Image (cartoon, rainbow, N blue to C red):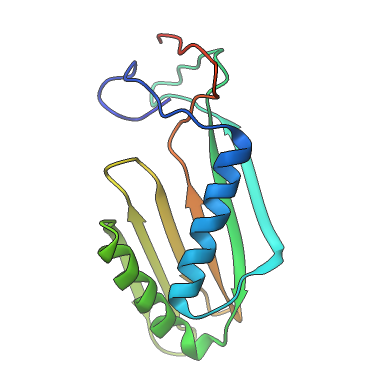
Length: 152
């Protein structure tokens, strides 16, 4: 379910296949902004049913897609690359909802953003244990094409 104030607000319509393709495309776009190439072997799409904030569910097939993929990059370059992604997201109208950069022996950087227009959220993480960036995309609750949205 959507976590919006109105639980029966019409959901966006998209197939699982299209949601995965969109998430893959958007992650690759963020990677291009960071000037890195994703490693397709690290791709992790995950479809799950939607559950409302009060535990409510519906039998209409609604789902959300969580997608993640890594791109190799030395730790020393993580902050600069994530900064480029931040600029690109802001230009696209995404709201930055979280940013943390830690220096020192174990530097890390985490960026989180959301599109208030359509509910898609994205994140980029560069962690000290990883010589890579992790790009994540999460869809809002989606309704499969042809499904009739149930009221909850």
